[in-house]
Length: 461
Image 1: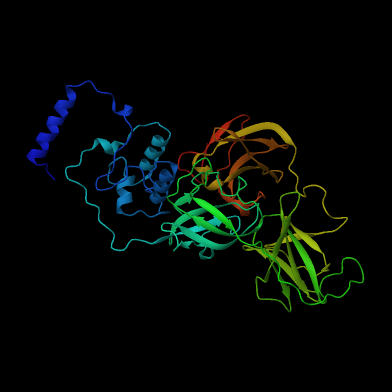
Image 2 (image 1 turned 120 degrees about the horizontal axis):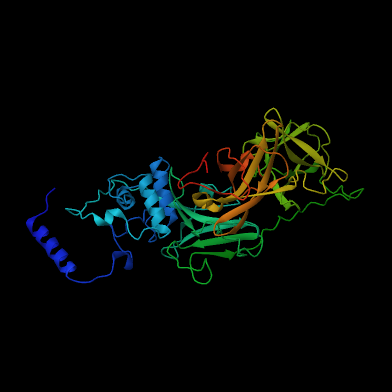
């Protein structure tokens, strides 16, 4: 489309005027280039007023059909001005975030006419959700916030049950899409990890997406109002006197425990022939043992024929022996068919050490620069293996600063190493808790392995 004569004349006059002065280079000025027809700058794809790695990730997800963008977001994301929003744009946003570039190529392209943004006929409605250790970091209507009628611009969730060990974020999500805005907006910052939850109990959560944090990171953004701590309903029945110590369970029932050594979460106990339909009765969290593993407890009829513990698609083998009051089992990382085997924990069988201790380190050290893998508070581990002997081992990686992680390879003879991005809500290292992984990589002592930009799975260093 042609420029008008008047527009050409004005532009030429401006260029001539600028050429007659000694001016600073463009990089010396603050970056402020709003997209045509928008109140947001190029690169600010999620429209939160900040150009950061969240925007780069959103562009990358859109390029592989894992996210949706409206018309305005597509203009904000097309930072090279080629008419497409793709991996090239994501790379440019990343370079801008780390000060490799001071502006985007699209800023040098003068549009011949103002760009008109086509307004969607029906904008998708989004909601705010609580995601955390209490719900497996997943979007659920059971944890959706609602507008607080008593305070404009504020959202509220009443009756949130929390423990001092819980961690969570508030996320904005549109139906059918992954969460695109997080509060707090830090990769490793979660509400609760700085001691904000002072006691186990029930809370009302208040949230202001436009709040400004001060010295307290969450000030004006998220705050909790404690309600009465949950108390058990008073039992008006008179329990029979126990004849022996440890027999205080109600007549006809027994208490069983399950140690979730593999980090399944949301554990149920299924029993037959007189129990609830699959997956059975939800177990309550009792304690966390010395190895950081969650112990669950439930009361079941004393005359059951068998029980199965299960959680999030995993289950144990059928347990038909040693079912007694106070019995406790834990999972081992071995299967019988598709079901996990268990070990009974007793006074003599209770392990005094981690049942799956890490092998002794070899002295060989490797490092990882996770880049976009660091999103969502992920933790990192390595998996080493030897195909000829069939041996393998896991080891946790430790942060050492500058976004780098390190680990000493366990003792043994290993063919390859795999770097694994793990679910932060699970402590056990296994493939069920994996989010992403590298390809099979050669082991080189002291080497820094770097996740390539915008890569997620099976990358090679």
